[in-house]
Image 1: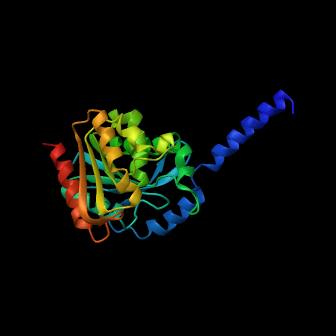
Image 2 (image 1 turned 90 degrees about the horizontal axis):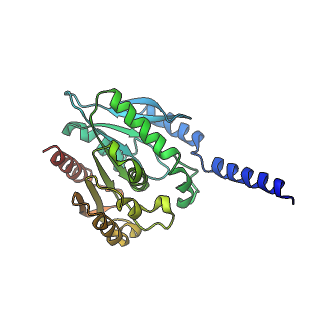
Image 3 (image 1 turned 135 degrees about the vertical axis):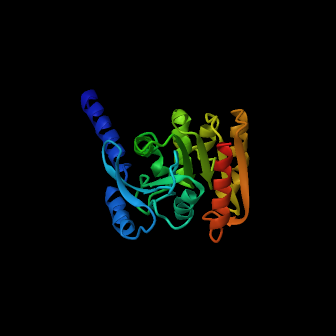
Length: 259
């Protein structure tokens, strides 16, 4: 094979790889078709990341407020997911925080976790920026990121480089020991100086529990005195039967930020 042909092949393979790792828009649409008609609290809104539209669900407080939380779900699901996401999406407005729950990039159900890594630097930041822009246009001044499971790792990666755009970060069920650089939340925590609530359950996933020391060490190495680790006794990774406790802890921590 001559050098020119070899270079062309490399470029083609790289482009094909990037396309293969793009979010599964057809799957996103299937989720959206199921979700939109079932929304009772909040409004479905179309957001655009510069390349594609994606679903957001905006739930606004009744009284005038300039505070809002962007909520990011875990692997392969949607912004109205009943576990963790929904309780916070509809509960935080009762505590004075509007919420914008957004569809994060997803792959097919059989995709390995590490297959998401290429989207961390491309699609993830674009979607968070679109959500921030939407809230800014509505006059929101205080924005926080809340992520569950892989959503928390995505949020942490975003904050590694753009922490000046939001006021705080709530991580729920976050793992810190992935070997892939974009998905290594411990590397992200080393670069985050914002207030951080790092929350997990005593019965969380083994990967989450084993990586607790790595998360704490990363925040400590960054000298982040605004980092708080919180364990909820009896809670699993999805905080089943712990919705109220989850909401109370997150809302209570967020309220302290304003005092």
